[in-house]
Image 1 (cartoon, rainbow, N blue to C red):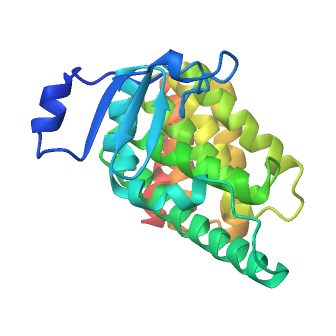
Image 2: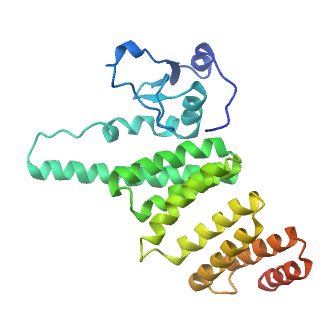
Image 3: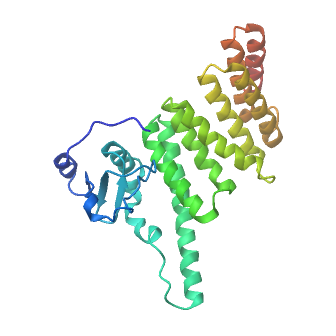
Length: 267
């Protein structure tokens, strides 16, 4: 799923600023036959475990485990245990409700943090590190809001952008389809989200040489950004530029120059 880093052996991991974590083969005999852990990133059968002083997580490969650690886990491992374990059922109803509320608040804070980390990685083109952070945010969103909430759209878009950077176009389209399904079924979804979704769809299409499809999505992005920010806004100008780039790729110089002139006028 993700581009691999150079594989480190266990000694290198422990010597690299000491004993924060280690990755080791999973002892399958320690688990019941039908209870083999699943990979945190792919959902496939796990073969290694990422052991920290706070929590143990499971992954399909050593490369995935290391990418998850470097991407987000090293910054939030100490916060995960109370959020990933079943809540105790002891205490009064009021105490249980308070625990649920506190857990929800903590998860929402971690969602914001993970999405920010993912954006930071995307901004410097470290796409393989952006993926674990966005995926962790997605899992917390599902835990709190379910599979159909509009809060899932942002993690899906960041996952798609990560896959686009890794040239995994099928996965990028898959995440965009999931985001689009939620948007279509959420009448209150904002024009800002719709604009960003169509912009990203257009980028995925143009990366695959599907210029006509890309132009439709860029035009939709301009429409929604114009409703949100105005037709002469800097946000809308990005759509004009992308649209001009699409015409240029098809050899339509006249139309591309018209859109580029529009961008210059706005700026």
